[in-house]
Length: 250
Length: 250
DNA sequence: ACGGCGGGCTGATCTGGATCAGCATCGCGC
DNA sequence: GCGCGATGCTGATCCAGATCAGCCCGCCGT
Image (spheres, rainbow over the protein chains, first blue to last red):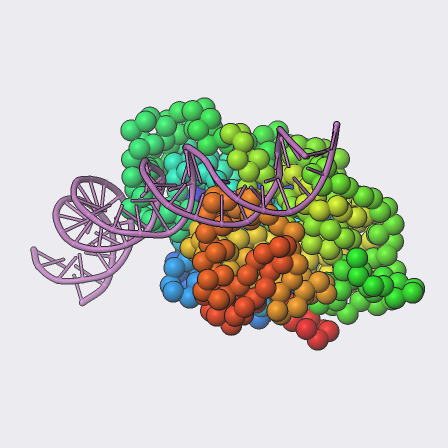
């Protein structure tokens, strides 16, 4: 946990920070955002927050902690679709679906605010600007999934890893949880493997290789960029798809 | 081109058909939909409709023909993210972005209606029900991308191919362009390769294998399901993620 | 009527990453 | 303070799918 001012306002929330990268929100907008944050809940590691096939249409906004969304295949293997960090929506995509098509569970202990379909739609009616901002966030999420698709389809294991960790760094910096030099990261090599479509064994080797090349170090729950520019080059990382160049300075 | 009734109404449009799988649209809603269809344009094969990096925020609704959206990597390879068939949106994801993060181009000659960000947002304001329907369609698009991600991450080439062609069949049937027995399909083996993260050579072998196993035949621009149930089994195809069980019978 | 070329198709070879098998360390519960 | 499950790490072997090299056919343009 980082230091908080004595009277934390919703301005401090990761969600507000993130949305501000897209539109400058008025105090009215921010009030509506903070209303969305009312029903705060806690979840322990591995407790399912959203389950494949469930029919109640609720989503969450992550306030603290990390989560991941994934699909299980008959056969037992799973594909992690994405990780969620503070400020991210969980299950936004299936609020409109009759049944959820994926699972979401915490990787670390998590605080999240529950948002129902009704809440969301009525908040949209109240402030169209917020609606636009949320749709922007949803588009950004999809853009990230697409980039993961490119990872799996056309990038080598090493490029994939570099690209993924760079993206994660950019996302975390946007909500104030990382610097250009690196960030702390609770992901195990198994989780990375399931997300990147690799085996855990190979993830290990790739990380070693990147470390020995002096490009990045991932150890003890911390990612350190040893040579940021070389990584960007290697991964052909072009942050345009994140659309982070907002009204606030980056 | 298929036969049309003497006075075609917007009800016949693939988009309306598709959205009807989710909500029953009123005649008012349908009028708004048909307004969206006003600015009809034609595009030849390979003419870029949307370009990576472009800044004008327009999308299209496909009225006839097939298109594909893809990303190019420095190095020349490309990853096709998805194909679009009549009734699908093109570039919806980046209407809200400052710059488009992908390309879209026709695979066959195409008729499409141009929709600007303004058009769309004002249509939403007019009929919230339509807004919901469009968001549903966007969610379905994302669900398909996620399923493609699972394809690339965790399914073998054969499973991948089967899964993909089954999904395409389901999508086409929804807009009245295919039957359970098969559908006509203008995709070359090169396009399939770029979409499924395979080499064209391997696509060829996989198709041969599926044919020799008596599961499906893809020849002369037509996909024929020779053993639908076996395919569903092989690919572990669960259409839940398409959320097609709508108010109209399927 | 003929060259060129986009597609389909094939065999031979190579390789990135999976799989299998196992060891070392650490934190935690009892 | 001991056992045990997670996690990190490593070597040896295997294989799905890439790559390379080419042939055949039908179509289109001149």
